[in-house]
Length: 40
Image (cartoon, rainbow, N blue to C red; front, side):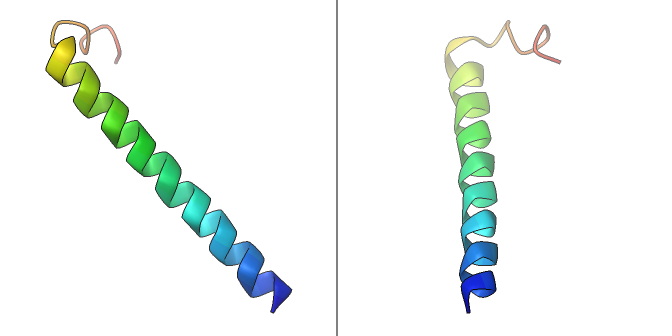
């Protein structure tokens, strides 16, 4: 039961990190369209 909760927490953290990175990339493209070439 504890292992399941731990696994769920890890998956949730990974999903949140993915959403955070997606939000940052969208925000960068909206406000700094010329900067995403150097961000590669």
